Image (cartoon, rainbow, N blue to C red; front, side, top):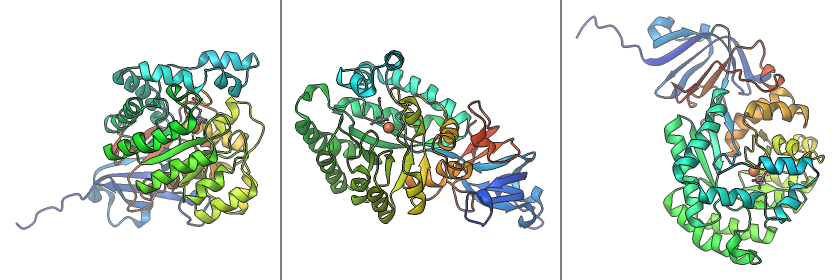
Amino acid sequence: MTNRTVQAPWDGLLLDARLATLTDNGQPYGSVEDAAIGWKDGRIVHAGRAADLPGPAASLAREVASADGAWITPGLIDCHTHLVFGGDRAHEFELRLAGASYEAIARAGGGIASTVRATREAGEDALFDAALGRLRRLVADGVTTIEIKSGYGLDLPGERKMLRVARRLGTSSGVEVRTTFLGAHALAPEFAGRPDDYVEHVCEVMLPAIAADGLADAVDAFCETIAFSPAQTRRVFERARALGLPVKLHADQLSDLGGAALAAEFGGLSADHIEHSSEAGVQAMAAAGTVAVLLPGAFYALRDTQLPPIEALRRHGVPMAVASDLNPGTSPLLSLRLAMNMACTLFRLTPEEALRGATVHAARALGLADRGTLAAGQRADFVLWPVRRPAELCYWIGGTLASAVYAGGARIA
Ligand code: DI6
Ligand code: FE
């Protein structure tokens, strides 16, 4: 056929934008002014100056709109959450305010164990509905990828149930969910007094079954005096490695058990919390390429005073991610942006470090290379923020700032 008009090739194009690409383009935030972003089939095809578009805007995309001068960032990535759980722990909040410590409550049968009871009792749909409500709040303020851990079932049916709910959240919300098996979160009540037997059960029964179901993208453990020892953690990691699953670790949160170095030894994607990690632990992380995941929500809620070794992490070039740790006990935090604010105020990250921590470094903590920056070829996950400067994403305390959220090129909020 002749004289046929060329089909508009892109799905969407936003003009009048300012981009915080978070690439290393030499500018703070990897910023580009007078910019445009275009996407097709779920991928970014242009993230740069509008002047560099390969033709007149109207001919390039099926839908062309103005961003009205908004800043656009990559979709935020919450790389450490316990989003799926039954019940709540508001009563323990009251107990802690009255002077009880987190450890004392845990030793008295509360803490994680109380959420385990509530999670085991909850039906799958009830768990799903409660988690979806929390997820929607995160998405409304820019989250497009989220990691969700199990760890409140502590038996095969319970852990499977949690991970199935997590997977279902991914297919029904437009957000991409990465799942992590955290069977070694706390001692299952059936194994009271027999922690090694429980670890064996995790390694020989639960982990192989979860892996065979394809329900876990990674494996985590809680290495702590009130949870599992380094030797027990090592067993879990060895099994994960044998099954081809990457590991990450709740490391050195309340004491230094050498968790950061242990995660690094297994080529861990991340070591998380790490308030008490030593310089040697940080060095091991740097050598292994293990990301530090900072969780200021738990630090705040527990009124912790031991700061993570931020200076050492910077000095050794360890990428620092920031996450919500959303969980009913130590971080009932429904906003990743608030975690970024806390990372600045409590841990003294710069706003740019905090934003990189919730995008490009968070992607790496999940082993994902296709997101976290705005560049051609990356997933079309991006957020419009009607603010004057990117630092405002960390400056405003709470609230919802995002005006539009896209995941895989589709608007989800
Ligand atoms: N560290 C945490 O911050 C959460 N789990 C963990 O191992 C706390 C989980 C809870 O208290 O329910
Ligand atoms: Fe956690």
